[in-house]
Image (tube, rainbow, N blue to C red; front, side):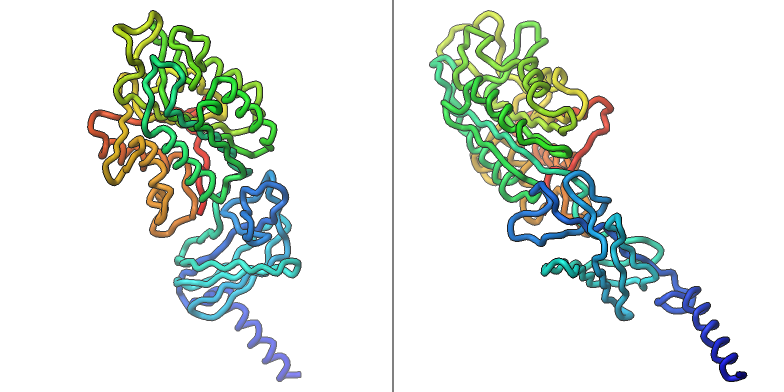
Amino acid sequence: MKVRRIAALLLLLLVVVATTTGCGGPGLITGAIDGYVWKHADARSAQAEGEPGFGVMAEAPKGNLAPLAGAYVVAEGPNGSAIARSDSNGYFRIGRLSSGYYKVTITHEKYLDVYEKSCYAEAGGTTRIGGTPMLGSLHILAIGINDYQSGYISDLSYAVADAELIVTRLGVENRLAKQYTLLTAEWDTTKSSIQNAIRDIGYNITNGDTFIMFYSGHGTHNDAGTTEYIVPSDANPLNLGTMISDQDLNNWINQYMPAYAKKIFIFDSCNSGGMYRSLAALPKGFTWSTGFEVMARNITGPRKIIMTACAKDENSWESSRPPIGGHGVFTWALTEGMRYPYPADADLPRPNHAIDTEEAFNYASHWTKYYSPGTQNPEIYRGESGSEWWYLFTY
């Protein structure tokens, strides 16, 4: 009886010591690793073809991503292994870890796939692993117009290349992308074709999704400077009605895109050499190409972010010289930040493998100013509150 009582006291003492000191040893402050395990429910946004049937996020999964309970999480580090399981919200947490690097392995009895991640647990803090908390998919419309039907409108050199580059980065190499539409041919870049493309994409938008519209080509505005226009390939320079006004675009977005969808607009107006040719003077009601500042202000609103390549009365430059190599400077800089090793990710050297609109714009703005031969200051407009930001790219 006495032996049992002594053994019980020793066991109690060990429990107290373990509870107060943690696995790092007496007196050491320990850290933790946590995250959320999700299962792919509908959208391709979080699961590209060939990727695992489940994944890990830095925030609670919502929308098209469902939490996955019962996943086994093993962290192997300096002092052995620690184990946890995800709860009904998909959340797991492994605490009481000594500082150091850990290999985290996540499995589930219903899946053959294995998720592995290396991370650093820091004393006194919690290291959250997993990808972007972006909900839903990206639907990208990229428009680039080099060739105009009217003999009075100057053709361009690099607008098509810009649209193709956007599709490559945001639509092909981006794990968030669900679908992209590329419009570059004369018959695909008419006013009606652009309207139809917005309508068709809107039909496929689901809760949590983001619509991105990129435009590279000519722009113009009226004499009063109150309305700006995208110039489609079939535009008549004597008829403003053949162009896409900011009001037209706003109406199409409101008509075809669900109110819950996020909308991102990226405008890179090509001002090289001016818009018009073979005219002694501009037609009444027109000015030279524009930086789309007025359009940005006129279409901003709830759940919208607009980026422009330059400010009002500035030129948006393009270059054939390295490193830009035949693109608009702003478009090149924007996409360069999302190319390996992904320098726009402000979380480096401990990346979260995601680039948001703020990170992408800040990187593009810096290098646009650096490489443009004249004054060019990109601008960003953030919805109604002025504080909107969303994830744009994951890798």
